[in-house]
Image 1: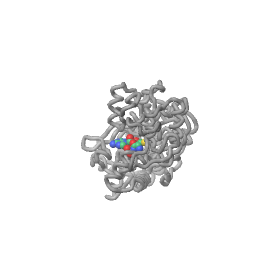
Image 2 (image 1 turned 30 degrees about the vertical axis):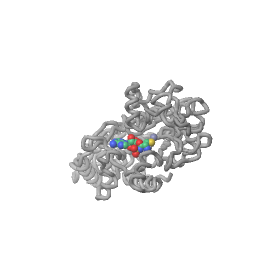
Image 3 (image 1 turned 90 degrees about the horizontal axis):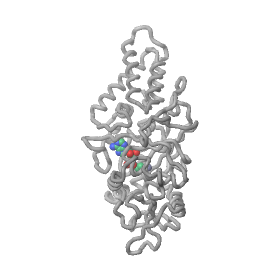
Image 4 (image 1 turned 180 degrees about the vertical axis):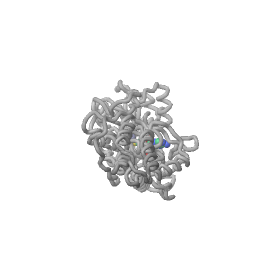
Length: 420
Ligand code: 5CA
Ligand code: ZN
């Protein structure tokens, strides 16, 4: 898939140190990258509705990781997907009388516009579910051949030996390592988040779908010996990550609603495909809520990035409003977030437009330290606030370091993605 244009990233003096993040599987703060090339897979959107602030917050969280890695001298390889064929997309298309392909194309384009406006660096590998159908089908055939998957026949035998294919979780002793849930918790979340625990014929209620046979009125592709159909969701991300980054890779991420079953299952599939490891660690962004509930397309309680932009909001104020919350915490969006962000943006802009300002060496170091400690953006903002306050107080007086405003503007741009 086509991505969006990358933002310019100014160079900074010196270099940042190792980036530590909290691995949500273990709760430990760990160095996120293991080698010179740092690799991350960030689950992409399901394009049936426009980007809301929850999506934006999740993508900005991983954008901070990419920016800090680059600043630390890593070469970064970042892969992402677009779930451009899936149940919710097909349901929305049917309900609104739009072709599912047109809906996906339109919403994927709007997402790209939103990401461009918000200064999010595009992924290096960007693969749609539709583009990857045949490689995913091959992976499902591989799992069947390896005895890690099985077919579930329709009760009336219409599958002709080619029923839906499910992963057999019993062959994966490491299942459960990502989310660390007990079985009851897994069953409850599986049912809530698109799983089908009650499907007759499965070996275990938790076994996830790998290949869904063609149903009347649904799009389908030739799966060879699988019969015509379409891939399940978790296997798509496992295969797109494997093909885009190689296995194992450093970080798999998304919002915390993906921790189980999506990341648990996709990691399990990746492990079995490669008889090894999927992601080395997982990072999850907290949920942004509105009026006491998680902001979600299915609930419809959304503040859309494109709507705020259409109202003339500066996308950098939107970005700053998001950065004022630590990525891993759950928080509620209110209009006051945006008001505070506008005021901050204004203060920072005034502070960097002076001739000189307090020396910025410590500010750059503080921003780097904050971000290298589990991407603590609020602490980074506080460091810039302190510099801006001094700069505005000192405005018109002597004792200022020539060039300091430029260093701060470049720091804020390169590391926080905020163009002043
Ligand atoms: N296409 C799949 C992933 S493969 C998907 O979950 N798509 S999505 O459009 O529903 O969500 C895109 C990303 O936004 C996911 O990482 C999801 O966890 C995150 N997200 C969704 N709602 C929120 C929210 N309210 N707050 C924070 N992040 C959210
Ligand atoms: Zn995914």
